[in-house]
Image (tube, rainbow, N blue to C red; front, side, top):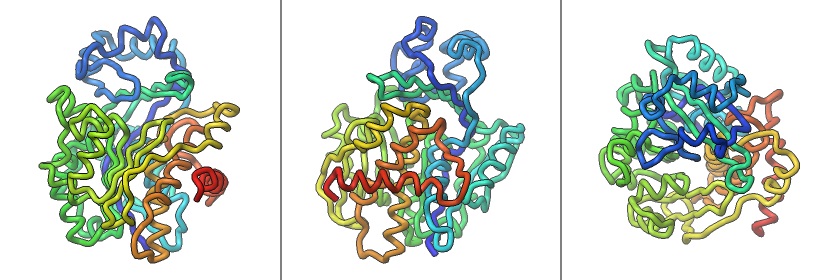
Length: 392
């Protein structure tokens, strides 16, 4: 039995699709300089900071942005829980257990979030509802942005996630086969002690995976400077796989160029990394410690998904990165089950590409299955075509 345990960002997504970022009413809400609290396509801002920037009530902001219409969907979101749900939906339940640890708020929304997660195959050994607001994100999606590739803007409330402390993680978490820290920049106490938590995970023999999120808290604290990841740079030597998007990679490395960012990660002590870039190619590297040795290489996104999206544009890009991580985790679990001596990072990346791309066909990050195995049955054909695309 393979056990995967995760901690990090879990929240309610309030989703508005077909928002025009170029609309005249939208322009005053856009950021003028880094860290000022304004909106930036592809990035997250905290509600309190945004309200100070906008200087009008949030209800008025919603009216301006959405033209006073209702949200398209309310869904489970967050770069920790969404990958875990994807993994739990696609992995065989007989030989893989997926667990999440966190906090929600006693505000009604928390009850919805907890009950919604309980309808998925993810287990909740320590997910409690406590005083405060349930973490939430308003997600505004413009499918026509970036020449039709689409982009989102996020307004986030950390809420009860502030109350989840490192000491709540016990031996059952660290003793898992795979430990995943997802979007911890939105769970401050976990993020600030990430070095120690990663070290303990490795001491217990776990494979460690870290997937990042835009760190607006540290960006606000020190605009334009390198983002910290835990207490020190030592965090990197305890990470077996880092998954970050292009912007996050630049900010974590303190560089302004993709090649320089890759060089930083190669020299940081990381075992492996994947850097995604939306609809553009991604970059993959491994030093051979956990995954087989892989020189730095760029690989494409799925041609078939890109083609199909031109025909079926009913979804949005929310959760693409999170589901990418879920696909990578699925592949890691499958490879562990086969008892491979070393894991194949290219294989994991392939499952990430098709899993992330498939998320564009529905609204929101979490796919709600009508029957067990439904999601894997839909992604499988894309995986087969992608393997042919890249020459296996």
